[in-house]
Image (tube, rainbow, N blue to C red; front, side, top):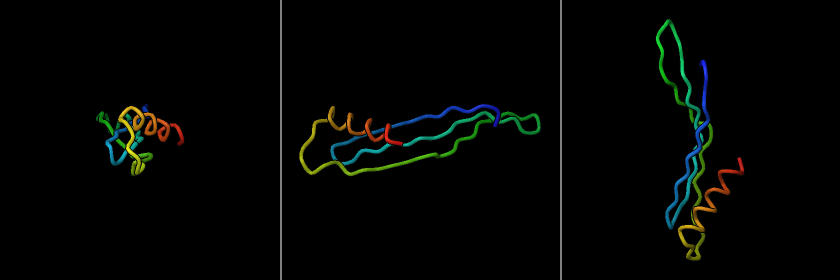
Length: 68
């Protein structure tokens, strides 16, 4: 892999939130260039029983992303 970038993606709903981290890199093998992806980290959590607003769930998901 020549160069790589770390990408973090999070998503929420009223029942679950998740976060995924993956590495995307450029490859150069036998004079052929391409892209490679690799999963680094993934986590899914069930939302709390009490009703939370979508903005609060977004903050909770962002907090999980930063815990890695």
